[in-house]
Amino acid sequence: MKNAFIIKICFLAVVTVFLLNLFSTNAQQTLNFSFEKLSIEGTQRPWGWSVASFTAGGKVIVDSTVKRSGKYSLRISDNNNDPASSNYYSLRYLIEPYSLRTKILKIKGLIKTGDLKGNLKIALESYKGLGILTDSAYKIIKNNTGNNWTAFEIELKVSAPVHSVYLTLGLSGSGTVWLDDIDCFVNNKKIEVAEASANMNPIQFHELSKYVYPFKSINGSKENEDQDFSDLLPFKKIVGDAKIVALGESTHGTGDFFKMKHRLLEYSVKEMGFSVFALEANQLNVERINNYVHTGIGDLKKLMARSLFAVWNTEEVLDLINWVRSYNNQNPSKQIDFVGYDMQEPSLPIDSLNNFLADYDIGLKAAVDALLLDLNIGGADGFLSALIALHHPQIKCTTFDLPPVAPLALAKLKQMNVSDRVSVASGDFVKDVLPSAEIISMGNILHGLNEEAKIELMKKAFDVLPANGVLIAIENVIDNNRIKNTFGLLMSLDMLIEIGDGFDYTQQDFENWAKQVGFKRTEFIPLAGFTSAAVAYKS
Image 1: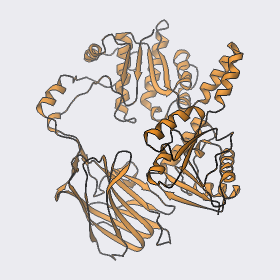
Image 2: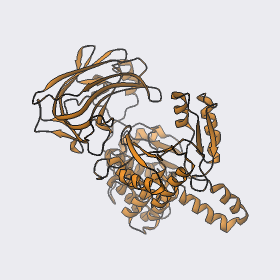
Image 3: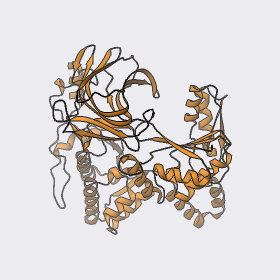
Image 4: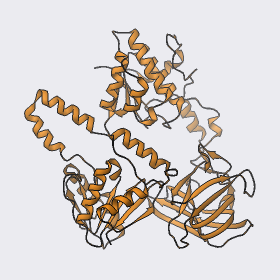
């Protein structure tokens, strides 16, 4: 069996790091409540803040023209003419709760409004478990402040078991709001950073120091370069006679991590006899790259775009693959394989399996074809239905998915003690009639289909709903101007790349399809992050 050098996301089996004054540094979260630090999007979003919900006309900007102090303030505006609207364009900030538990969290700041015909909602919320809201405090501001900056204050007693605390700033209706000079207090003591963990004590520091090894460089070799790897001897000792070495990374997009992996791969090949590099990517898709590193046939950048997830389409991964190709070209008897070990999209593996069975076991192919008829998406393990049943005892639900998923759903429903009110139905969304219900919900299903299939599935839902029935599609719905929901646009691109004709859609797209199949009206409800509920009503 070949040795394998495997890079695995979020799993760190071997640590090779260097520390700078670690003993005096504990884990902290910087608070950007003054909006002085910008994100990579520049003035379109302050660093650390994320869009919690959006509206068609909502907009946020880090404003350098209207401010109370410093360089910037936060400006939120919307043109929704309904002052009673419950739809908010909002941003939120996750505050590390470690130092907040059982204490009083207080937020003070300044606001200024411009022709406000709606509400500014300031919220502090804490959560535990599976997204269960534990504590909350809200402040609603409805009146114009004119040209004056006006102080606001909100406080929350944070419970012990929470894992998340959010500060949310949202605007409904129309108008403009500026916020600036927001300060955070814990038990009336102002803080600039939130502690994420306890300080490291001398015993912990001493113990960790036993496993820290300095290294000279993170850079892999250039073509025909003979690099000194003597600083990696501790890595070799740690690995020992292991056949598989797994490394991880704190973030997917940091180039330095992959530069170091490139260098470790070289060392593992040249000094330790490893001969396989495996990446978290679809197995059969990556065979295109494996063919390239052995033959040199193809355009590597195009192969990477077709075969790897977006986080791997980087210059650092390109350099690593080029090194593997160069090494294989110079060492014909000692080749390196480049492979994937994931399978998130089944069409290529299914095609490969069918082709294999057609040549080697035509009798078995018929049985396998029958099993593969039900490969599609649906209610999964019934968790959504279970949550609805827990929060609304009067409602009965049915979760619908493929037959192999049914045992998982039954086990989950039993575990959550809702088996008496949530039933499990099996079938295929594409081929079968949907179970009848007053409300049908589907999460991240439509975006995986082409337009014709989207309309057909919505028509199936329409046909089984009663006269007052409702269809809810939970997706990353894109704004009609296609400029705000960045995540939805990227997800749409991902669907196009991975599936070929799937795509995420705009509010107008959904409304058009809904009316085409017979629904009378639609509504869009912002949810957490970039997600919305697209709702279609039969009456």
